[in-house]
Amino acid sequence: MKALREFIKETFLFGQEITFSDDDSFLEMGIIDSTGVLELVMFLESNFGVSVADDELVPENLDSINNIVSFIEGKHSPSAALPNVTDGQTIVEGSTAPTV
Image 1 (cartoon, helix red, strand yellow):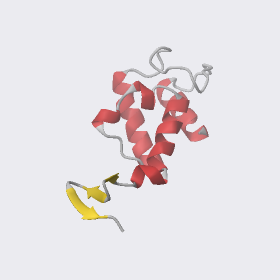
Image 2 (cartoon, helix red, strand yellow; image 1 turned 90 degrees about the vertical axis):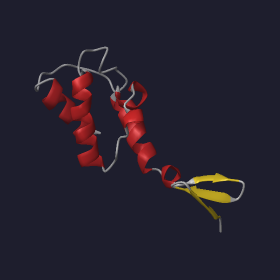
Image 3 (cartoon, helix red, strand yellow; image 1 turned 90 degrees about the horizontal axis):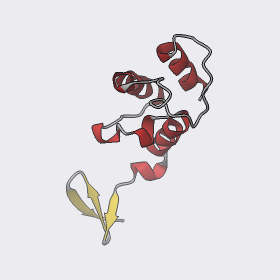
Image 4 (cartoon, helix red, strand yellow; image 1 turned 60 degrees about the vertical axis):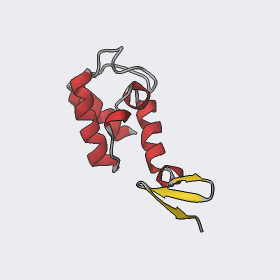
C-alpha cells in the first residue's frame, strides 16, 4: 500500500521522514487525529472504491496501515458482498427470497 503510506506522509506528516511501521497506531503516534480520520476516509473512498459507514470508523479498521489494508481487503472480498443467509432464505435489504 505504497499509495496509502505516501498519502499519510504527505497529508499528515507534511513530507517529514518520520518512520512508522505498518502496525503502528496513527493515534498513539500522533500522526492522525480524529479530524484527520475524515480526510483518510475520503482518500480511501475515492482511491480504493470502498464506502466507509459511520459504524466502521473504529481503530480496528483505520488506525494503522495493516488495519486499513485488512479493512479494504475485507470490503473487496467476495464474502463481503454476499447477503446474509438463514434457514434457506436470503435476506436482501429487508426482504426475503428463497435461495437458489
